[in-house]
Image 1 (cartoon, rainbow, N blue to C red):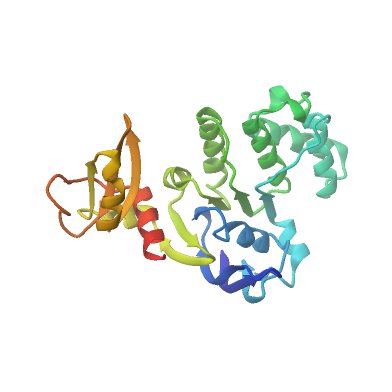
Image 2 (image 1 turned 180 degrees about the vertical axis):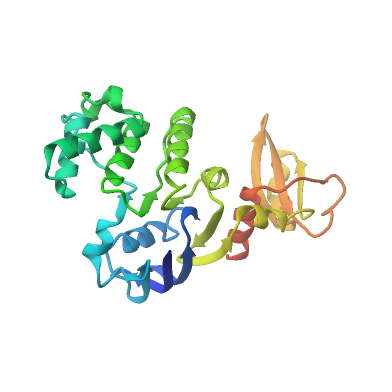
Length: 289
């Protein structure tokens, strides 16, 4: 289990990236959901031993992340938000190089591991291609392949599906789901659907503060009969936003469809709708303003 206790981090420019963050992450997929600038990447880098918190502690299976960095790194797989590749190196050769850095010095063993990971990430047929020719989704799958070297028990992926087309996104999420059956996988993202599709447990973070933790299904159920929708004229949108707690606005054929949070029908013309994780997310962010 990953245990995060009262972790805070302030950068030299005065930005309070994390404020007293406390989380428990069990084996399986865990979604960390928040807008850009919420502190997600700061928390991921801190867990990954790339920086120390100003206060608080992080332990994985009882091992302190701050004082036993080498031990944690041997059990860690990390795919950062910005994962660079050498564009003129073939995927198989680059993964072999990473395997050497990970400590696999016997060539036969290394070749077996590289082959297995390329098959697992569906990149075997592209193993001889240069990384610079890979699509965004292929690069992300290669990133997961290198993160899985050494059979890590903790895998961190930071904004992995941003910019992927729907087909690549689905392929990548299916891969993460398979990995998450056996190890702790933290999926850090601002994309609500990624968490809704994959994660049995989650946390919402904004401005460095954890706004909620729990199971997405339970959070959605708690909002039943409290979310209302209505199609309105576009010029009327500012008025509705000032009069009601509008959760979200979506244009349909040029007209805004709004979701409003209310214990009862806000006014005539609103109809109740089944809430989803997006409603939960925007409601928590709105309350935190």
